[in-house]
Length: 96
Image 1 (cartoon, rainbow, N blue to C red):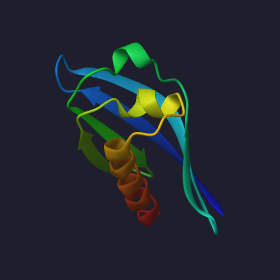
Image 2: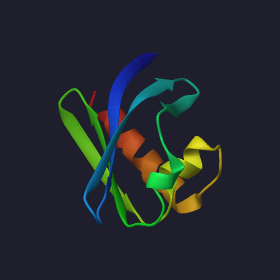
Image 3: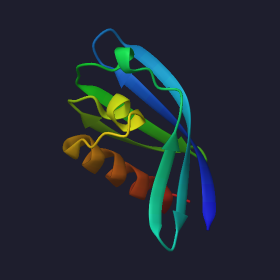
Image 4: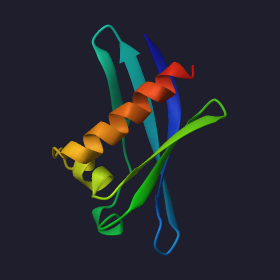
């Protein structure tokens, strides 16, 4: 099992807001999981947004039109955003 510290940056393309929170990406025999903290729902409404994951000087990014991180922070299930974030987490794990 390995732990990759990652910095998740969510940029709101309109207005250029940039919000940073800490996250950890875990991989083991059960698969991948991500733990995030520090999100505030009111900031993330609308879109489109770009999410950038950084680890060890490398980054991957993805774009989505809905409320990914606020939804995730509340334990919700959001189909489009789940696909985007998991593709990015898998790509980040491959960069190790």
